[in-house]
Length: 97
Image 1: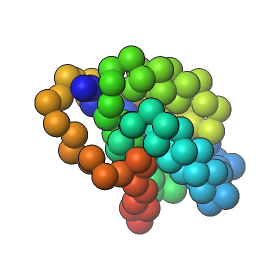
Image 2: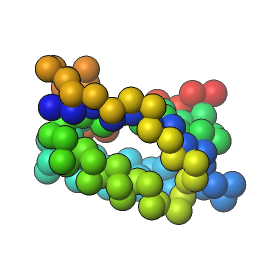
Image 3: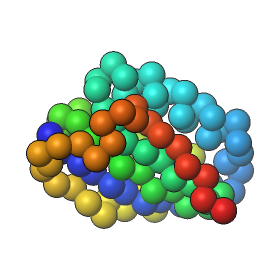
Image 4: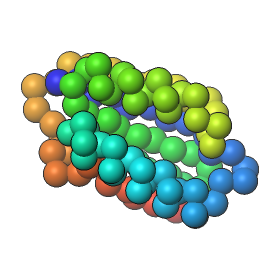
């Protein structure tokens, strides 16, 4: 098992409908791969945690790095884990204002 946490900056034109789309697609894809985690967003910045099999998490992170809805993607944690911190969340979301 592996946990990866990153931060990034949203593009200026990113709206609520874009966030909803990200969450819907993420939850569906994560369910299939048994990836868990959360996404926090404050209108300008993201922080996301992903947990699962290392190769699956790194594959998702590679796609995230190339997503043009944000920039400045910076990994802050990448570590092996024994247990999940978010076992029941395929992708929980929290708006931080």
